[in-house]
Image 1 (cartoon, rainbow, N blue to C red):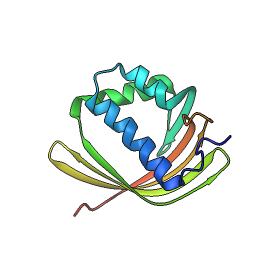
Image 2 (image 1 turned 30 degrees about the vertical axis):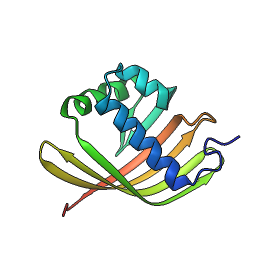
Image 3 (image 1 turned 180 degrees about the horizontal axis):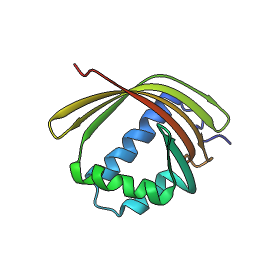
Image 4 (image 1 turned 90 degrees about the horizontal axis):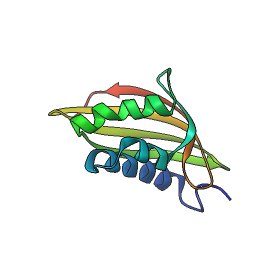
Length: 129
């Protein structure tokens, strides 16, 4: 069984990121519990060359929770093969009255229950409108 369960890959990845972000910034549950709900204990994410394991990912959530940015992900393309997905998207973020727009290229591996096991992300900041 694949983690995408017949879901369109664009919808799966958009929902994954939106739900994770929403729970982090709008909830009061422990960040570790939220991270574990969306990621495996052996998660490895490499974002723009920076490696994050579970502990580093939890630490990364602290400033996000403190600043409570709004975020919207616009997924342009996504393809899935088995438990892997590749996606190209634009992330729109408003943080402390500053608008950011990022091109995002994501390659990830997910478990059958939809948690991320591996993620590789490349981003590029583009001028916000």
